[in-house]
Amino acid sequence: MSSSVENVVIVGTGCAGLTAAIYTGRANLNPLVLEGSLPGGQLTTTSEVENFPGFPDGVDGFMLMDNLRKQATKFGTRFEQAMVTSVDFTSMPRKLVCGDRTILSKAVIIATGASPRMTGIPGEKELYGGKGVTTCATCDGAFYRKMDVAVIGGGDSAAEEALFLTRFASKVYLVHRRGELRASKIMADRATSHPKIECVWDSVPVAVEGVEAGAVSGLKIRHVKTNAERVLPVKGIFVAIGHVPNTGPFAPALAVDEGGYFKPSAGSQVQSKVAGVYVAGDCADHVYRQAITAAGMGCQAAIEAERWLAEHDA
Ligand code: NAP
Image (tube, rainbow, N blue to C red):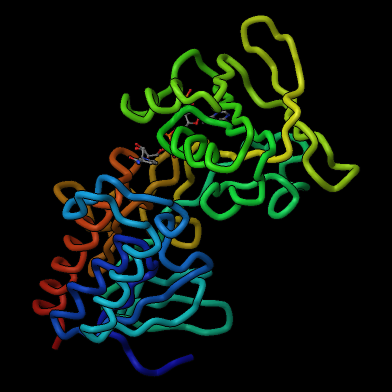
C-alpha cells in the first residue's frame, strides 16, 4: 500500500474528469488522474463535435480531449493508468483499490462516464471487435468500404453513426424499434433524407449471423407489429443503443438510481453521500449527457472539492 496521501484523485479522463483536473490543478492541488481503458472517454470515438461552445466550425473529438489533457497537464495534473476495482470511503483518507494497489486521497472526484449498451442478441458477443460487430463508426467505419452495414438504434448516436458510415459503406440500414427516431430533429432529418441510408422501422434485432464462419454475414431482425423475420445482408453491425454508467466498483459505497447512475445528494449536482467525494459527468447524469454538461459538472466538483479541502484539511 502506498503511504502518501493525495489531495484529490480524479477517476476518469473524459470531459468531466479533465475539466476537474484543470480546475483542481489551477488551485494548486496537484491532482492525480486515474485513466482506465478508454483514455479521453467517449468523445475520442466521436468524429466531429458540432455543439461544444467556442468552435463555430466544429471540433474533432479526439483533438478536443487532447487539448483538455494538455491544459490539465500544464497546471500540474499527473496521470496514471489504473482501474479502480473497489473503494473504502468509511474512513479518512479515502481508499481507492486498484487491483493489488491502494491509493489514498483526501478528496475524490468520480468521473467514470458510461459504456456502450449492447443488445445481448445471439452472435453479438462472439463477433464483437474485428469480426463485424462494433460500437464505434469513427474507429471501424473505414473497414466497411463499399459494403452494406446496419446501425441499431434511434437516438443521436445512431443517426450520427449512420451518417458517418455513408462515407464508406454502399448502404446503411438504420434499424430502429419504433416508427420514428428519437434523435434531435436536425440529425433525424439528415439521416432519414440521406440517399444511402434506409430506415428499417419497427424492427428489433434478433441475431447476428455468421458465428460459424467467424465474421458477420447478416443481421436477423423481427418486425414488432407483424412478427415477420428477415435477414439484412450486412458485413458490419454498429450498435448505438445508448450507454450504461460505469459506477460498479463505487456503487456499494455511494447511492445509485435504478439505472445505476450516481444519485447526488439533495441540493447538489455533484456531492455524493460521502463527504469529500464528488461525482461528475455521464456516470451521474442520465438527462443531459453532453460534453459541455459533463465539463460543467467536472468544474462544479472541482470547486466543491477545493472548498471542502480548504475547510477540512489541516
Ligand atoms: P439514447 O438517446 O438513449 O438512444 C438510444 C436509442 O437506442 C433509442 O432510440 C432506443 O429506442 C434504442 N434502444 C435502447 N435499447 C435498445 C435495445 N435493447 N434494442 C433496440 N434499440 C434500443 O442514446 P444515444 O443516441 O447514445 O444518445 C445519448 C445522449 O447523447 C443523448 O442525449 C443525445 O442527444 C446525446 N448525443 C448527442 C450527439 C450530438 O448532438 N451530436 C451525438 C450523440 C449523442 P427508443 O427510442 O425506443 O427508446
